[in-house]
Amino acid sequence: MPNTSTLPVAIVGAGPVGLAAAAHLVKRGLTPLVFERGAQVGATVAEWAHVRVFSPWEFNVDAAARSLLEAEGWRMPDPDELPTGQDIIRDYLAPLAAHPALQPHIRLNADVLAIARQDRSKLATAGRDDAPFAIVWRDAAGARQRTLARAVIDASGTWVRPNPIGLDGLPVDGELENRDRIAYGIPDVLGTDRASYAGRHTLVIGGGHSAINTALDLLDLKEQAPTTRVTWATRAGGIERLMGGGLNDALPGRGLLGVRATQAIRQGQVTLLSPFAVRRLTADAGGLLVEGQSGDTAKAFHADRIVVATGFRPDLAMLSELRLSLDPIVEATPALAPLIDPNLHSCGTVRPHGVVELAHPEKHFYMIGMKSYGRAPTFLMTTGYEQARSVVAEIAGDPVAAREVKLKLPETGVCGASPALPAAGIQSIAPAASGCCVRREVAV
Image (cartoon, rainbow, N blue to C red; front, side, top):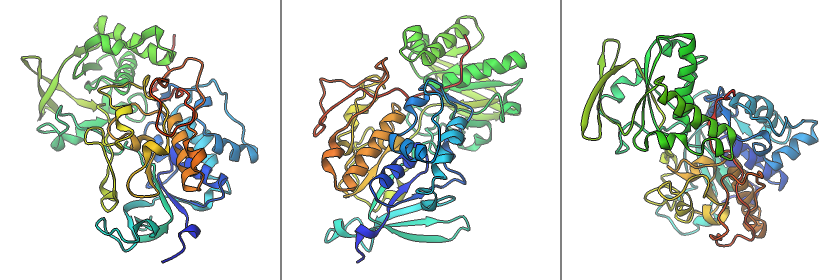
């Protein structure tokens, strides 16, 4: 058995949180090995490159990453500016990945297929904690590779596994058969995807900020192509929920989304169906016949396209030989789940956390970033950076630093911690910085 201390720490995912973990490893004198399924770092961010985030640059750059970059002459963008996904890749992730301390340790087009303990299935206990991890991955040429690691940090996110339309968490009848007319997430309806939506009737499904983004972009498109129509279906909540914090929201951009969405509905620019549950989709006249139910009333109408913005869920298939402990509801660790359960919390009530809440029975395996939240939608980018710092400190043998969970916060206090709920093993708590949601820039 090899000496695991000489092995790298494997990181799955080269997004903001994965690269932050790599930077913290380098700072600690450890060797990262980053596997990115895409052809570029931030491949998932590139899928929402047109979207502007709510939080300014100040809270979108990890401290260890910034230290590495500035030592090479990099200059921090305007701390108060709100970047788009494209800005984050161009001005932060790409330079970070090109840093000489990280670049040799990043594998692009590297799709991780499975992770296990070397020569040990999930059933094997003897010597398990001392055995290295075996990462099986497929390279750009399609060849299967096997790499050993001393620890594994899974920062692969959830973007590639969007929730389906059904209220029960399953695809509705006809959803899979008509995927060519359905988009998930936040399509670029004003840019690369414009031809699919201009002059057509689009049904947007979802009640969160991703749905608001898409509906408002479609309204902007309607100004250019007047025959564009928008129907917006939410599962519950009605217009009051869309309003959110409104102009009193501590993140002004987020509040303006709610205000503008509410005005559009009241002015009849958008047809709102709330509550509405889709039951069946059928191909119809080049589009889709949407059959559903609003309360006790059945409703059917034609739509050319559907945008589904109902959240995401983690893909756990590659982890089937690891010993995980997951909450049955949220699919986060049992210690983290009560802090982020959307039945109990919004991003305004989730407090900082670190290695204590992120630990699994599998020693030195951690999920961080959006994947650590399972199905909960309240993740903060800055929280992910603090997760990375805490987990890397633990792997490096510094348990005191790992448990000193601290977050710099904006003066607004948005997404703040609750001092009445101290975390086990955490020495100091500060409210989490903003950065949980994304938006397109709203002009006022």
